[in-house]
Amino acid sequence: MTLKEIIKIIGGKSNISDNLQVNEIKTDTRKINKGDIFIALNGKKYDGHNFINVAIEKGAVACIVEKLENNRYSNKCIVVDNTYQSLFDLGNYIRNKHNIPLIAITGSNGKTTTKDLVAYILSSKYNVLKNEGSKNNLIGVSETLFKLNNDYEVIVMELGTNHMGEINTLSLMCNPTTSIITNIGSSHLEYFKKRKNILKEKKCITNGMFNKELILNGDDRYLKKLKGYKCGKNRYNDLVAYNINENLNSISFCIKLDKEYKIVFNNPGKHFINDILLSIKTCLLYNIKIDTIIKKINSFKLTDKRMNLLRVDSNTIVNDCYNSSYESIHAGLDYIKKVPGNKILIIGDILELGDYSIKIHKRINRLVKKIKNCKVFTVGIYTDYIRGLHFKNPDDLIQYIKKNPIRNSYIYVKGSRRVGLDKVVDYLVNIVE
Image (tube, rainbow, N blue to C red):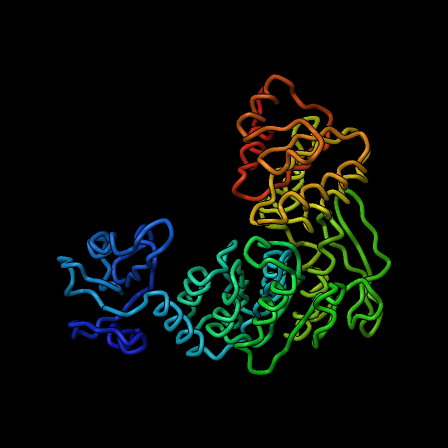
Protein backbone atom coordinates (compact mmCIF):
# COMPACT_ATOMS: atom_id res chain seq x y z
CA MET A 1 0.00 0.00 0.00
CA THR A 2 1.02 3.61 -0.50
CA LEU A 3 0.80 6.40 2.05
CA LYS A 4 -2.01 8.01 0.03
CA GLU A 5 -4.02 4.78 0.14
CA ILE A 6 -3.55 4.46 3.90
CA ILE A 7 -4.59 8.06 4.53
CA LYS A 8 -7.77 7.47 2.52
CA ILE A 9 -8.59 4.15 4.25
CA ILE A 10 -8.31 5.59 7.78
CA GLY A 11 -9.76 9.02 6.97
CA GLY A 12 -6.62 10.72 8.25
CA LYS A 13 -5.52 14.34 8.09
CA SER A 14 -1.99 14.99 6.88
CA ASN A 15 0.26 17.30 4.91
CA ILE A 16 2.00 14.27 3.40
CA SER A 17 1.76 14.58 -0.37
CA ASP A 18 4.16 11.94 -1.65
CA ASN A 19 3.06 8.50 -2.76
CA LEU A 20 5.64 6.39 -0.93
CA GLN A 21 5.17 2.63 -0.77
CA VAL A 22 4.77 1.33 2.79
CA ASN A 23 6.52 -1.94 3.71
CA GLU A 24 4.73 -3.00 6.90
CA ILE A 25 2.43 -1.52 9.54
CA LYS A 26 3.80 -1.70 13.10
CA THR A 27 2.57 -0.79 16.60
CA ASP A 28 5.86 -1.50 18.37
CA THR A 29 8.85 0.79 17.68
CA ARG A 30 11.21 -2.05 18.63
CA LYS A 31 10.10 -3.83 15.46
CA ILE A 32 10.25 -0.82 13.13
CA ASN A 33 12.27 -1.19 9.93
CA LYS A 34 12.99 1.32 7.22
CA GLY A 35 9.90 1.93 5.11
CA ASP A 36 7.34 0.90 7.77
CA ILE A 37 4.49 2.99 9.13
CA PHE A 38 3.97 3.30 12.91
CA ILE A 39 0.56 3.43 14.63
CA ALA A 40 0.77 5.21 17.99
CA LEU A 41 -1.62 3.37 20.33
CA ASN A 42 -2.54 4.76 23.72
CA GLY A 43 -2.38 1.57 25.79
CA LYS A 44 -2.61 0.69 29.48
CA LYS A 45 1.15 0.35 29.92
CA TYR A 46 2.47 3.05 27.60
CA ASP A 47 1.42 5.76 25.16
CA GLY A 48 2.78 5.19 21.67
CA HIS A 49 2.80 8.93 21.07
CA ASN A 50 5.87 9.13 23.30
CA PHE A 51 7.77 7.04 20.75
CA ILE A 52 7.02 8.93 17.52
CA ASN A 53 10.57 10.29 17.35
CA VAL A 54 11.98 6.79 17.84
CA ALA A 55 9.84 5.41 15.00
CA ILE A 56 10.87 8.11 12.51
CA GLU A 57 14.54 7.92 13.45
CA LYS A 58 14.45 4.14 12.90
CA GLY A 59 13.16 4.66 9.38
CA ALA A 60 9.34 4.85 9.58
CA VAL A 61 7.97 6.80 6.62
CA ALA A 62 5.04 8.09 8.71
CA CYS A 63 3.17 7.76 12.02
CA ILE A 64 -0.58 7.46 12.57
CA VAL A 65 -1.43 9.53 15.66
CA GLU A 66 -4.29 11.05 17.63
CA LYS A 67 -2.32 14.14 18.74
CA LEU A 68 0.68 16.10 17.50
CA GLU A 69 1.81 18.04 20.61
CA ASN A 70 4.22 20.18 18.54
CA ASN A 71 6.25 17.10 17.65
CA ARG A 72 9.28 17.96 15.47
CA TYR A 73 8.20 15.20 13.10
CA SER A 74 4.62 16.46 12.78
CA ASN A 75 5.10 16.76 9.01
CA LYS A 76 5.33 12.95 8.94
CA CYS A 77 2.20 12.33 11.02
CA ILE A 78 -1.29 11.32 9.94
CA VAL A 79 -3.89 12.48 12.47
CA VAL A 80 -7.01 10.41 13.21
CA ASP A 81 -9.66 10.45 15.93
CA ASN A 82 -8.82 6.97 17.20
CA THR A 83 -5.69 4.95 16.34
CA TYR A 84 -7.37 1.70 17.40
CA GLN A 85 -10.05 2.37 14.78
CA SER A 86 -7.26 2.84 12.23
CA LEU A 87 -5.88 -0.54 13.26
CA PHE A 88 -9.31 -2.06 12.58
CA ASP A 89 -9.82 -0.21 9.28
CA LEU A 90 -6.43 -1.23 7.88
CA GLY A 91 -6.78 -4.82 9.04
CA ASN A 92 -10.23 -5.14 7.47
CA TYR A 93 -9.09 -3.49 4.24
CA ILE A 94 -6.14 -5.85 3.85
CA ARG A 95 -8.23 -8.91 4.74
CA ASN A 96 -10.86 -8.11 2.10
CA LYS A 97 -8.25 -7.19 -0.49
CA HIS A 98 -7.26 -10.88 -0.43
CA ASN A 99 -10.24 -13.06 -1.29
CA ILE A 100 -9.09 -16.21 0.52
CA PRO A 101 -10.71 -18.33 3.26
CA LEU A 102 -10.30 -17.27 6.88
CA ILE A 103 -10.95 -19.78 9.67
CA ALA A 104 -11.64 -18.05 12.99
CA ILE A 105 -11.41 -19.88 16.32
CA THR A 106 -12.57 -18.81 19.75
CA GLY A 107 -13.51 -20.45 23.05
CA SER A 108 -12.58 -20.44 26.72
CA ASN A 109 -10.03 -23.27 26.37
CA GLY A 110 -8.32 -25.09 23.54
CA LYS A 111 -8.40 -22.34 20.93
CA THR A 112 -4.60 -22.12 20.52
CA THR A 113 -4.22 -25.90 20.23
CA THR A 114 -7.09 -26.03 17.72
CA LYS A 115 -5.62 -23.13 15.74
CA ASP A 116 -2.18 -24.71 15.63
CA LEU A 117 -3.56 -28.12 14.69
CA VAL A 118 -5.83 -26.77 11.93
CA ALA A 119 -2.98 -24.70 10.48
CA TYR A 120 -0.57 -27.67 10.70
CA ILE A 121 -2.93 -30.01 8.85
CA LEU A 122 -3.90 -27.42 6.22
CA SER A 123 -0.21 -26.71 5.55
CA SER A 124 -0.07 -30.11 3.83
CA LYS A 125 -1.94 -28.50 0.92
CA TYR A 126 -1.99 -24.74 1.39
CA ASN A 127 0.30 -21.84 2.29
CA VAL A 128 -1.20 -20.87 5.66
CA LEU A 129 -1.00 -17.62 7.62
CA LYS A 130 -1.83 -17.84 11.35
CA ASN A 131 -1.43 -15.59 14.36
CA GLU A 132 1.51 -16.74 16.46
CA GLY A 133 1.20 -17.72 20.12
CA SER A 134 -1.74 -15.96 21.73
CA LYS A 135 -1.66 -12.79 19.67
CA ASN A 136 -5.45 -12.93 19.56
CA ASN A 137 -6.58 -9.40 20.47
CA LEU A 138 -7.13 -6.41 18.17
CA ILE A 139 -3.41 -5.63 18.02
CA GLY A 140 -2.27 -9.22 17.48
CA VAL A 141 -4.95 -10.06 14.92
CA SER A 142 -4.43 -6.87 12.91
CA GLU A 143 -0.63 -7.29 12.95
CA THR A 144 -1.14 -10.79 11.55
CA LEU A 145 -3.39 -9.45 8.79
CA PHE A 146 -0.72 -6.86 7.95
CA LYS A 147 1.54 -9.78 6.95
CA LEU A 148 -0.98 -11.00 4.38
CA ASN A 149 0.26 -11.13 0.79
CA ASN A 150 -0.54 -12.94 -2.44
CA ASP A 151 1.47 -16.01 -1.45
CA TYR A 152 -1.00 -17.05 1.27
CA GLU A 153 -3.98 -19.28 0.45
CA VAL A 154 -5.71 -19.71 3.84
CA ILE A 155 -5.75 -17.73 7.10
CA VAL A 156 -6.25 -19.44 10.48
CA MET A 157 -6.96 -16.90 13.20
CA GLU A 158 -7.45 -17.31 16.95
CA LEU A 159 -9.77 -14.66 18.42
CA GLY A 160 -9.56 -13.92 22.15
CA THR A 161 -11.53 -11.78 24.56
CA ASN A 162 -11.80 -10.78 28.19
CA HIS A 163 -14.43 -8.05 27.79
CA MET A 164 -17.80 -7.87 26.05
CA GLY A 165 -17.69 -6.67 22.45
CA GLU A 166 -14.16 -7.77 21.53
CA ILE A 167 -15.15 -10.87 19.52
CA ASN A 168 -17.69 -8.80 17.58
CA THR A 169 -14.97 -6.31 16.62
CA LEU A 170 -12.51 -9.04 15.61
CA SER A 171 -15.11 -10.94 13.59
CA LEU A 172 -16.16 -7.81 11.73
CA MET A 173 -12.50 -7.11 10.94
CA CYS A 174 -11.64 -10.68 9.86
CA ASN A 175 -14.86 -11.62 8.03
CA PRO A 176 -14.43 -15.38 8.65
CA THR A 177 -15.57 -17.95 6.11
CA THR A 178 -15.60 -20.67 8.80
CA SER A 179 -15.83 -20.24 12.58
CA ILE A 180 -15.07 -22.65 15.43
CA ILE A 181 -16.11 -22.36 19.09
CA THR A 182 -14.19 -24.79 21.31
CA ASN A 183 -16.17 -24.43 24.58
CA ILE A 184 -17.73 -22.09 27.12
CA GLY A 185 -15.71 -22.22 30.34
CA SER A 186 -15.00 -20.08 33.39
CA SER A 187 -12.11 -18.00 31.98
CA HIS A 188 -12.38 -14.25 32.65
CA LEU A 189 -15.46 -14.53 34.86
CA GLU A 190 -14.18 -11.45 36.68
CA TYR A 191 -15.27 -9.41 33.65
CA PHE A 192 -18.11 -11.48 32.20
CA LYS A 193 -19.79 -12.25 35.58
CA LYS A 194 -21.60 -15.38 34.30
CA ARG A 195 -21.18 -18.03 31.62
CA LYS A 196 -24.25 -16.91 29.70
CA ASN A 197 -22.38 -13.67 29.00
CA ILE A 198 -19.35 -15.66 27.84
CA LEU A 199 -21.62 -17.60 25.48
CA LYS A 200 -23.12 -14.37 24.19
CA GLU A 201 -19.65 -13.00 23.53
CA LYS A 202 -18.30 -16.11 21.80
CA LYS A 203 -21.39 -16.35 19.54
CA CYS A 204 -20.39 -12.97 18.11
CA ILE A 205 -17.73 -14.76 16.08
CA THR A 206 -20.40 -15.25 13.40
CA ASN A 207 -21.22 -11.51 13.16
CA GLY A 208 -18.63 -10.90 10.46
CA MET A 209 -19.38 -14.11 8.55
CA PHE A 210 -21.23 -14.26 5.27
CA ASN A 211 -22.32 -17.90 5.21
CA LYS A 212 -22.41 -18.75 8.96
CA GLU A 213 -20.43 -22.02 8.58
CA LEU A 214 -20.07 -22.81 12.29
CA ILE A 215 -18.31 -25.81 13.88
CA LEU A 216 -19.00 -26.47 17.56
CA ASN A 217 -17.99 -28.60 20.53
CA GLY A 218 -21.27 -30.48 20.79
CA ASP A 219 -20.41 -31.83 24.26
CA ASP A 220 -20.53 -28.35 25.73
CA ARG A 221 -23.78 -27.73 27.61
CA TYR A 222 -24.12 -24.23 26.11
CA LEU A 223 -22.88 -24.83 22.57
CA LYS A 224 -24.97 -27.95 21.93
CA LYS A 225 -28.03 -25.68 21.78
CA LEU A 226 -26.64 -23.70 18.83
CA LYS A 227 -27.05 -24.49 15.14
CA GLY A 228 -23.90 -25.78 13.50
CA TYR A 229 -21.85 -28.89 12.82
CA LYS A 230 -21.20 -30.53 16.21
CA CYS A 231 -18.21 -32.63 17.27
CA GLY A 232 -17.70 -34.53 20.50
CA LYS A 233 -17.73 -37.74 22.49
CA ASN A 234 -21.50 -37.90 22.95
CA ARG A 235 -23.29 -40.03 20.37
CA TYR A 236 -25.74 -37.34 19.22
CA ASN A 237 -22.92 -35.28 17.66
CA ASP A 238 -22.31 -35.18 13.90
CA LEU A 239 -18.69 -36.31 14.33
CA VAL A 240 -18.22 -38.66 17.30
CA ALA A 241 -15.09 -39.97 19.04
CA TYR A 242 -15.46 -43.51 20.44
CA ASN A 243 -13.25 -46.40 21.60
CA ILE A 244 -11.19 -43.84 23.52
CA ASN A 245 -7.90 -45.01 25.02
CA GLU A 246 -5.36 -43.02 27.02
CA ASN A 247 -1.89 -43.74 28.35
CA LEU A 248 0.77 -41.52 29.89
CA ASN A 249 2.12 -40.40 26.51
CA SER A 250 -0.79 -40.37 24.07
CA ILE A 251 -4.49 -40.77 23.38
CA SER A 252 -6.31 -42.67 20.65
CA PHE A 253 -9.92 -42.94 19.48
CA CYS A 254 -12.01 -43.89 16.48
CA ILE A 255 -14.30 -41.87 14.22
CA LYS A 256 -16.75 -42.99 11.55
CA LEU A 257 -16.83 -41.36 8.13
CA ASP A 258 -17.17 -43.54 5.03
CA LYS A 259 -15.62 -46.22 7.29
CA GLU A 260 -13.98 -46.41 10.69
CA TYR A 261 -10.69 -44.55 11.20
CA LYS A 262 -8.33 -44.65 14.17
CA ILE A 263 -6.80 -41.37 15.38
CA VAL A 264 -3.59 -41.37 17.45
CA PHE A 265 -2.48 -38.12 19.15
CA ASN A 266 1.02 -38.37 20.61
CA ASN A 267 0.34 -36.02 23.50
CA PRO A 268 -1.36 -36.89 26.81
CA GLY A 269 -4.79 -35.67 27.89
CA LYS A 270 -8.30 -36.73 26.84
CA HIS A 271 -9.38 -33.07 26.93
CA PHE A 272 -7.63 -32.63 23.56
CA ILE A 273 -10.14 -34.94 21.83
CA ASN A 274 -12.66 -32.17 21.17
CA ASP A 275 -9.94 -29.91 19.73
CA ILE A 276 -8.85 -32.75 17.44
CA LEU A 277 -12.41 -33.45 16.26
CA LEU A 278 -13.00 -29.76 15.49
CA SER A 279 -9.76 -29.74 13.50
CA ILE A 280 -10.69 -32.90 11.57
CA LYS A 281 -14.06 -31.52 10.53
CA THR A 282 -12.58 -28.17 9.51
CA CYS A 283 -9.83 -29.73 7.40
CA LEU A 284 -12.29 -32.09 5.70
CA LEU A 285 -14.27 -29.00 4.67
CA TYR A 286 -11.09 -27.65 3.10
CA ASN A 287 -10.58 -30.81 1.05
CA ILE A 288 -7.78 -32.41 3.01
CA LYS A 289 -7.98 -36.20 2.68
CA ILE A 290 -8.65 -38.10 5.90
CA ASP A 291 -5.47 -40.19 5.52
CA THR A 292 -3.42 -37.00 5.38
CA ILE A 293 -5.28 -35.57 8.38
CA ILE A 294 -4.53 -38.70 10.43
CA LYS A 295 -0.81 -38.56 9.58
CA LYS A 296 -0.56 -34.88 10.50
CA ILE A 297 -2.38 -35.41 13.82
CA ASN A 298 0.01 -38.25 14.61
CA SER A 299 3.08 -36.04 14.09
CA PHE A 300 1.70 -32.87 15.74
CA LYS A 301 3.57 -31.32 18.67
CA LEU A 302 1.79 -29.14 21.22
CA THR A 303 2.78 -25.54 21.76
CA ASP A 304 5.35 -25.02 24.52
CA LYS A 305 4.03 -25.21 28.12
CA ARG A 306 0.88 -27.12 27.21
CA MET A 307 1.03 -30.64 28.67
CA ASN A 308 4.66 -30.94 27.54
CA LEU A 309 6.39 -34.01 29.00
CA LEU A 310 9.96 -33.33 30.12
CA ARG A 311 12.13 -36.21 31.34
CA VAL A 312 14.78 -34.91 33.73
CA ASP A 313 16.93 -37.45 35.60
CA SER A 314 14.57 -39.47 37.81
CA ASN A 315 11.64 -37.04 37.37
CA THR A 316 9.01 -36.50 34.70
CA ILE A 317 7.71 -32.92 34.51
CA VAL A 318 4.35 -32.13 32.92
CA ASN A 319 4.74 -28.48 31.93
CA ASP A 320 1.19 -27.12 31.64
CA CYS A 321 1.82 -23.61 32.94
CA TYR A 322 1.07 -21.59 29.81
CA ASN A 323 -2.21 -20.51 31.39
CA SER A 324 -4.98 -21.87 33.58
CA SER A 325 -8.72 -22.21 34.05
CA TYR A 326 -10.89 -24.49 36.12
CA GLU A 327 -11.68 -26.65 33.10
CA SER A 328 -8.05 -27.07 32.01
CA ILE A 329 -6.76 -27.85 35.50
CA HIS A 330 -9.61 -30.35 35.95
CA ALA A 331 -8.45 -32.10 32.77
CA GLY A 332 -4.83 -32.06 33.91
CA LEU A 333 -5.67 -33.52 37.31
CA ASP A 334 -7.75 -36.26 35.64
CA TYR A 335 -4.63 -37.20 33.72
CA ILE A 336 -2.20 -37.04 36.65
CA LYS A 337 -4.31 -39.11 39.03
CA LYS A 338 -3.86 -42.10 36.69
CA VAL A 339 -0.07 -41.87 36.93
CA PRO A 340 1.47 -44.60 39.14
CA GLY A 341 4.04 -43.85 41.84
CA ASN A 342 4.92 -40.56 43.53
CA LYS A 343 3.19 -37.44 42.27
CA ILE A 344 3.91 -33.75 42.90
CA LEU A 345 1.33 -31.07 42.10
CA ILE A 346 2.55 -27.49 41.75
CA ILE A 347 -0.56 -25.35 41.39
CA GLY A 348 -0.68 -21.58 40.90
CA ASP A 349 -3.61 -19.19 41.09
CA ILE A 350 -6.24 -19.05 38.36
CA LEU A 351 -6.55 -15.33 37.69
CA GLU A 352 -9.40 -13.12 36.43
CA LEU A 353 -12.14 -15.00 38.27
CA GLY A 354 -13.29 -12.03 40.35
CA ASP A 355 -15.98 -12.95 42.88
CA TYR A 356 -15.69 -16.62 41.83
CA SER A 357 -12.01 -16.91 42.86
CA ILE A 358 -12.49 -18.50 46.29
CA LYS A 359 -15.33 -20.77 45.14
CA ILE A 360 -13.40 -22.17 42.17
CA HIS A 361 -10.17 -22.72 44.08
CA LYS A 362 -12.15 -24.61 46.73
CA ARG A 363 -13.56 -26.78 43.93
CA ILE A 364 -10.00 -27.50 42.80
CA ASN A 365 -9.18 -28.53 46.37
CA ARG A 366 -11.92 -31.18 46.19
CA LEU A 367 -10.34 -32.54 43.00
CA VAL A 368 -6.87 -32.59 44.55
CA LYS A 369 -8.11 -34.57 47.56
CA LYS A 370 -9.03 -37.46 45.24
CA ILE A 371 -5.45 -37.96 44.04
CA LYS A 372 -3.43 -40.57 45.95
CA ASN A 373 0.34 -40.67 46.61
CA CYS A 374 0.46 -36.97 46.00
CA LYS A 375 2.35 -34.04 47.53
CA VAL A 376 0.93 -30.59 46.79
CA PHE A 377 2.70 -27.22 46.54
CA THR A 378 0.58 -24.13 45.90
CA VAL A 379 1.67 -20.65 44.79
CA GLY A 380 -0.21 -17.36 44.92
CA ILE A 381 -3.16 -16.03 46.92
CA TYR A 382 -6.25 -18.11 46.22
CA THR A 383 -4.40 -21.43 46.09
CA ASP A 384 -4.15 -21.10 49.87
CA TYR A 385 -7.63 -22.68 49.76
CA ILE A 386 -6.07 -25.85 48.29
CA ARG A 387 -4.56 -28.30 50.75
CA GLY A 388 -0.78 -28.45 50.56
CA LEU A 389 2.36 -26.49 51.35
CA HIS A 390 1.68 -22.90 50.33
CA PHE A 391 4.10 -20.29 48.96
CA LYS A 392 3.44 -16.65 48.13
CA ASN A 393 5.57 -16.67 44.98
CA PRO A 394 7.59 -19.01 42.72
CA ASP A 395 10.94 -17.88 44.17
CA ASP A 396 9.96 -19.05 47.65
CA LEU A 397 9.00 -22.45 46.24
CA ILE A 398 12.32 -22.71 44.37
CA GLN A 399 14.21 -22.01 47.58
CA TYR A 400 12.24 -24.77 49.31
CA ILE A 401 12.99 -27.26 46.51
CA LYS A 402 16.69 -26.40 46.71
CA LYS A 403 16.68 -27.52 50.33
CA ASN A 404 14.30 -30.44 49.70
CA PRO A 405 15.14 -31.93 46.28
CA ILE A 406 12.43 -33.79 44.36
CA ARG A 407 13.36 -37.25 43.05
CA ASN A 408 11.58 -40.17 41.40
CA SER A 409 8.35 -38.21 40.90
CA TYR A 410 5.81 -37.17 38.28
CA ILE A 411 5.55 -33.39 38.61
CA TYR A 412 2.49 -31.56 37.25
CA VAL A 413 2.87 -27.76 37.00
CA LYS A 414 -0.21 -25.63 36.33
CA GLY A 415 -1.13 -21.99 36.88
CA SER A 416 -2.08 -18.74 35.18
CA ARG A 417 0.75 -17.21 33.18
CA ARG A 418 1.24 -14.16 35.41
CA VAL A 419 1.89 -16.38 38.44
CA GLY A 420 5.24 -17.23 36.85
CA LEU A 421 5.46 -20.98 37.40
CA ASP A 422 7.63 -21.28 34.29
CA LYS A 423 10.47 -20.16 36.60
CA VAL A 424 9.88 -23.27 38.70
CA VAL A 425 9.90 -25.48 35.60
CA ASP A 426 13.14 -23.86 34.40
CA TYR A 427 14.74 -24.58 37.77
CA LEU A 428 13.56 -28.20 37.80
CA VAL A 429 14.83 -28.74 34.25
CA ASN A 430 18.23 -27.09 34.75
CA ILE A 431 18.94 -28.16 38.31
CA VAL A 432 22.51 -29.32 38.89
CA GLU A 433 23.06 -31.27 42.08
